[in-house]
Length: 307
Image 1 (tube, rainbow, N blue to C red):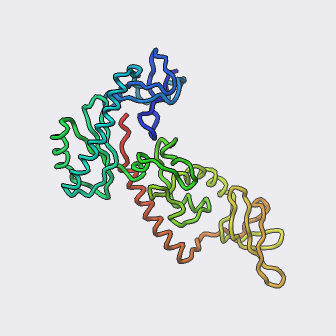
Image 2: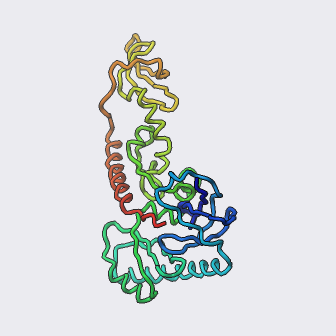
Image 3: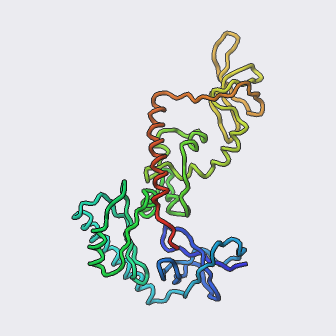
């Protein structure tokens, strides 16, 4: 078994695990740890716990020390310098007429590296920008392209639900979200209703997807012909979580009416294999497919895990 402790370097941000050694550390304590960027200052957000050694593919890095007054002062000075570096970099981007949008700047704790995060629609030749920045700041310069979802995570905000964005509060990693998920959850296929602040499909579509997939295995599809206690009918809509099916039927006078049934009380005569969409839905689907493709590109350009 291995003793671990959870540390976060910025909020919002992912929680990373480190070996606390013999240090007695409380929640919200600032600590100095060793990362791929060198020494970094973070805040303890998860108390000590034991996990099997098999949970870790590589040895955990150790917490070097609890941050002292000097460490915190230096960290705050770096934050002020990052604000100045942001302004300077924006001016250089404008001067060089580069098609890129600067989103964040980050100094390594020991000032050995200065990272600039940006978004762009494609590849950007920023070699001249790096030269000019290196001449000004006299340190190693690194530019890192990120996706729009990562950009929104850094900016922060609230979602349509009124709560803080998932990516800004608890979501550690982005997962691919698809149109299929929205369709299976009976969500509106209007892009404006199922897109987040980043303009991509909402991350929360992923949360209940496994439940929907499991239930849909046992439910008829919309358009399927089913046998009910009132005769044969066609499935009009489905309440997936409740497993309630709304069926279109005809009475003795050939008049159409609708009735809801529990899925277990229905017998599928012929399941539907085609999807019927009106012109508006077809237009929305085209927009959603573009969003889905952009999301795939984002997953490739999102910043790498450097810790």
